[in-house]
Image 1 (cartoon, one colour):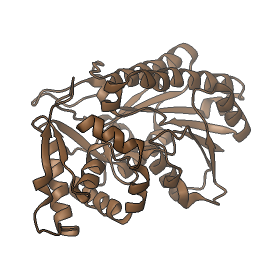
Image 2 (image 1 turned 90 degrees about the horizontal axis):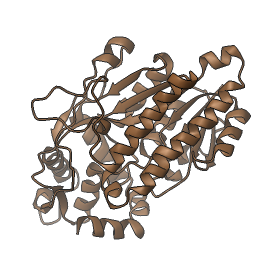
Image 3 (image 1 turned 180 degrees about the vertical axis):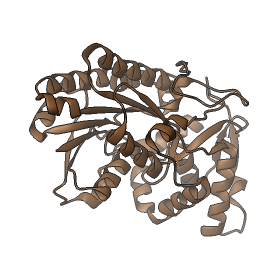
Length: 352
């Protein structure tokens, strides 16, 4: 038996593939279009590993997906493939709907056709795990209860709206066609291999290069931070024991303001890679104009996942952040490779 991981060369996807093959020997087929955020270097340690097969392609290519499903005897699909950065979705929404909505539709159609041809035992055992975000729920007030699986969808950015649409598609294929789908909605991930447009790797990269550390608005936006390794273990548990048709929220139980996170990164870098002039990296913090529709607070209520499947995060934010900073300090060549050319131009346009 084999699993198909879409978007498996991206940040969370590549961590999932690496963790999956570290935990068991079930083969993985990785499908990734290798857009700017997909990077085969993330999976370099699997070169020559017979358990891993990489295919460059899009989830929108139903013929290719169908060929992979049939040829590899796939028993589960884990769908990470998505355009995922809010700022980019504000600058140009169309690619987010092309990939996250239409791409998911084509993927579901290919999976539906494949599952229809399986025998009853394999059809009953098949799973489609759709990895989504807490941003579909919108924003929370400071004292409001964290997001539960029953919260209504209130997306506030084009990215969040595209992911909400894909979640609804996945649910509809369960209700209409009986496809064994499961949806997970996670909080903000951090850890190795994250493309330096997201907050934590961006701050590390800019700090080391003596650039401004851009903070939107007052920096008091709250996020629930989830170490990517914990996210991967939660997904493995959901794939193992999750109930088709259900949604599971995955959170790290670590609510921090953006400015707290940035100051914590600066303190770690002050200790691990001090500036030559002896000043703190915090001196590079710069507040910039807030982005449109910026959600004020996210927080996840993890009780369903803990109570029904027995999963809880293992990594505290302080230790996870230290591990993350250490990884970026040890992998500066990877960072340099992904932050060249078009990426630098985009950052200049975005942050000024």
